[in-house]
Amino acid sequence: MYTNWYDNPYLIAYEKLDGITQNTVNANVTANYKFNKDFNLMLRLGYDNYNNKETMTNPTANIFSTRGGDIGGWDAKGLYRLYNTWGFSTNDDLILTYNKKVNKWSFDGLAGGTLYYYVDESLNAATKGGLISPRFFSLKGSVEPPTITQGGSSRQINSLYGRASVGWNDAVFFDFTGRNDRNSAQPKTSRSFFYPSLGSSVVLSELIKMPAVIDMFKLRGSWTVFKYASDPYNINSPYSTKTSAWNTLNSADYPSYLVADGVLPTSARTWEVGAAGYLFQKRLHFDVAYFNKYYYNRQTDLNENGNTAYLPSSTGFNMVIVNTKETYERRGLEITVDGSPVKTTDFEWHSTINWSKQHRYYVDTDPIYTPDNLWAKKGQRMDTYTQYYWLTDPNGNVIYNNGFPIESDYKKKYGYGDPDFSFGFINNFRYKNWNLGINIDGRIGGLMYNYMYDKMWDTGTNPDSDNQYRYDQVVNGLNNYVGNGVKVISGEVTYDKYGNITSDTRKYAKNDVQVGYQDFAQSFRGGDMGIQSESFVKLREVSLGYSFPAKLAGKLGVKKASVSVTGQNLFLWTNFKYSDPDIDTENLNSPSQRMLGFNIKVGF
Image (cartoon, rainbow, N blue to C red):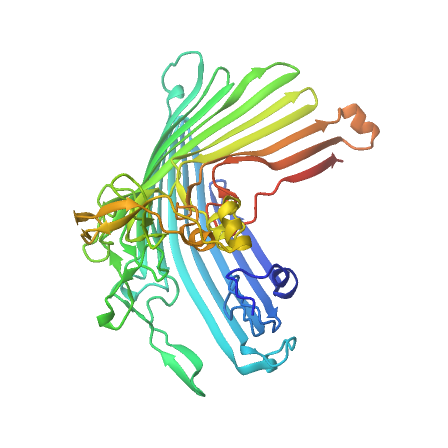
């Protein structure tokens, strides 16, 4: 049997098939009734319906296949899976608006309600234990009784909301909004919840005299609260069923999690301040904003992705949905500057530069559910990147045992996962009827696991593994590789619960144990645990276009016409090996692809 951890390429291309058919119907009706010039009533009805079908097949091929699995999974003994999903949603609004202007004052108002309701259903059926014939793709071809799973979910949200806006002299503006949702996915005690917002802006250039170079200058600020309800049925305790759990007997399992009483919706409070302006006869524009988003009453989830409250095994359950006392803030700064440094009748260079950064910080920790480690502390960043590491002596030399490096039982901090900042640099050059666009952007800082690079050591495809020691083992049968580092010849070391050394009496000597290079490379790999900087700069797009003069376009029988050629992802500068970090996750991604396009536009 083919037993590598990755799929056979031929199988992926020609045998592992996943076909999807999607059918969607959208419909909406809008009606307006104007009482007078100030009041308007709008009724809007919306309806969506979908019906999708997915089939997954792979023949009996005795190929161990692990990647790309889904509900039903791929199966080396053969698979046929049928997955149907269907449902509908309706979103209906009734909104009364008011608009009035009195001298220098302007008044806008809105009051309304929305009813949103959806139903999703699914039926998943898959063969079990393989196929009785290599290509008999049918549920009847299942070796064991097929697995059939039926699913469904629905939610209804009834909303009432309003907005009031006041403006004075086209210079001072104030807005207030309020919304109350009644969400069926919440417990009865917290099913109805309210969240407001406030916003204001002042155009100072309309109120006070400013230097001649300033055409417009505005300050703004806002404050808002938003709330997120539970997922449907999270507050319930639905049983799960399994066919043929014990020989021919079926089973039903109670969920592995508990739900605390009166769980509140997750809440977030955001405030933002900013400034914007135009200068030099609107040749230059800038916008600066700072925001602070505070998350509290956070519902833990079941995703086991950093926001899960675990229970000790003695309780008989794994997790609990509860409002944790852990809170955090997301703080960020965004700056945009754009303008035309050069502008003449025939030539103009317009450029936009944007720069932004944002990070999450612990504000409060939960004494029960916040992880007990050195990094989940008040004021610390939440994106600390931790992983196991290779043990080293005080001088930084890797410690070996029997010729192989020793991995720590504890994790350490490597850095942070989020980038330090992101940027973009967009340029457009116009010369008469020609246009040249050049867009560059990137992210600087941050760490990410390079799955591609790390796993290439497993398969022997990593270029860094091509050396004399590998040749000696494969061709000459020699196990003659000696890792660069030290070995322990006496003493011992003890650690506290966080992995800090409390006592160390170890003595070292240079490592001199020979091993096979292939075994060593598959263990130590690149020596970095696959963790690499995800910084990159990308030439995102270059375009060159020509707009035909009106007289020439007229001769062609059109009002206007233009042609252009565009290239995307043309160059990538990064130390992240053999993959594109732009996706912000590495899961055996395809390399970044250059794309070329040609565009013709005509107007009649």
